[in-house]
Length: 111
Image 1 (cartoon, rainbow, N blue to C red):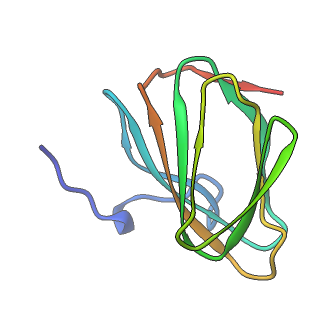
Image 2 (image 1 turned 90 degrees about the horizontal axis):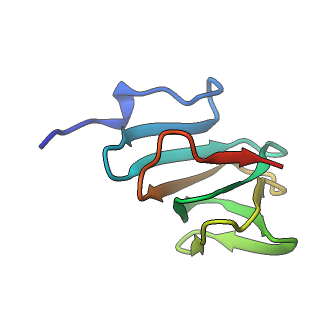
């Protein structure tokens, strides 16, 4: 067992990107934040499935070419092999939870 507070961790890109509260051994759990206009490169995972749950704001998550406009309270499930891309086209920050499982240290393939 362990307990972690999000204030103990940092976003990958300063004030945005993923902030991993847990990495492995069986899953990843992260908070993800994007400022208006920010995005994250298109990629897919060979083994891990990914879920995003929107805590605040709105975001477009493109999965295999289909744009999905998500807002607070929405959850999207992305299967292994599905190419996905996130972009904040809104005027406000977006904050969401990301889970990846089953954990595999190197499983992201950029497109």
